[in-house]
Length: 229
Image 1 (cartoon, helix red, strand yellow):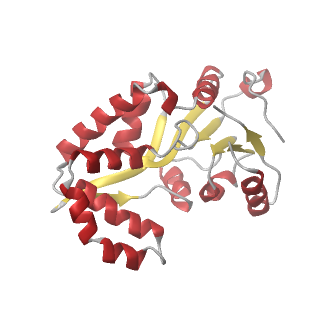
Image 2: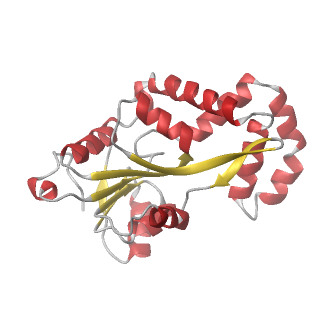
């Protein structure tokens, strides 16, 4: 089933609904936090040397868990960074990204704004880090949103990941937020199956036919596909 890019229908607007949006790959092209980390490495070449020293650990973890392997690179990118400095750096990068209009999914942002205009309760549920994604949305002029995202905490060596808001953890985060039912959920990832299952309408953004089939098999029902640019 293909969803047209027309304005949210009158039926949709008849009563307030909860609508969930993933962020990376749905509202922005690419992975915002990865872009931030790359900028950190480019600005401090010594971090490359430190990452190279951690390569044996990365190679050991990579076959078993890409998430844990990725955490090594996150730790290196944020070593020596206090919470205050992180917030400043993330806010500055959010402002920088917002000045790259082609970085963002125009159709996705328009769809989000249509839901807001229809009176829907829109929640951005993302694996991106909270300060960064909130800053980006604010820079884009998107207000009135609820954001449930990954979170960092300060440690002895710098900032570290406290909560990675991916997969089934999105459902747990929504539950803690007091949300257990939603009408529609937008994603581009197979990882979001747990978030799509409770949705009355699951929407796959820019997904390949192969990914669509995998999602439909995992959900046991048809999904909606959209092509957004």
